[in-house]
Figure 1: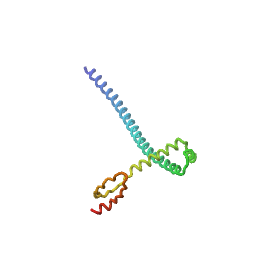
Figure 2 (figure 1 turned 180 degrees about the vertical axis):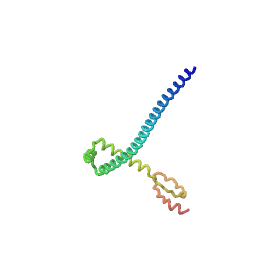
Figure 3 (figure 1 turned 60 degrees about the vertical axis):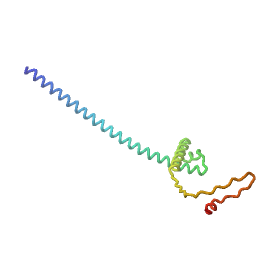
Figure 4 (figure 1 turned 135 degrees about the vertical axis):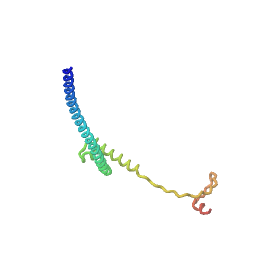
Length: 143
């Protein structure tokens, strides 16, 4: 029986050592996964910031091309001057147009209305009869 107990203890020790090796390998794998995930998140944040800068630059280019359009230049002429293809020129112009529409739609116009006193009704004019123009201010002042 002593021999079986010794063998059992030796087997447990070997299993413990194997588990420690597996555990350290798993820990190393977890660290690699975490590092790769962090690099991915940072790269995606960099991409989002770069995309915002690209979008802003494209809008500015489109606005500059739109200024050329106000000078009666054709898309072909603008594309040649800017050294870009016509489809790209048209796309940039479209961006500038959308950007301008958004700006115009975001402008709020405030209108104030002053109350007006009621006006006396005017008798209907029979056909053929000339009607005297009604001065609404005079009617309101007469009250």
